[in-house]
Image (cartoon, rainbow, N blue to C red; front, side, top):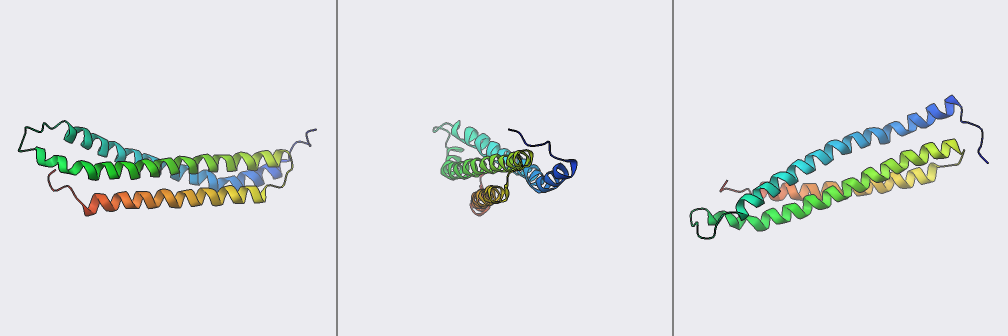
Amino acid sequence: MYPDTPSVSQLSHVISLAAAPAFLLGALAAFLAVLIVRLNRVIDRTIVLDAISDDDTAKSRLKADLPRLMRRTVMLNRALFWAVIISITITLLVIVAFASALFEIQHERGVAILFMVSLAAFIVSLVDFAREVRIALSEFDHYA
């Protein structure tokens, strides 16, 4: 059966523990926005370059940038994937914290594991983002 309703002090304790993951979700939303904007710019640039006719000798040299743009797209897509995984695990973390408080279940290990998984995924996402930025800056498109 259901345990007694959690007290206000128990709920306030859970809310205070869920504050850090909630702030992390806010930061992830901003990070996702940055990744999406960069991905949109790369895709737009790819569409423009792909539309250049092979007969246009003055602009056809710009198509040499397409492989680099495709590598950037792959990295940004992977960074977005991991950022979404992070968001899901952080959301699960908050749900587990509140559900365990409601049912008076020990949740410290589960929450710790979810938090470590989300931070590991965050590292992977940041590494892919850093690699994409490095390609964007080191192989700068001089023909723009």
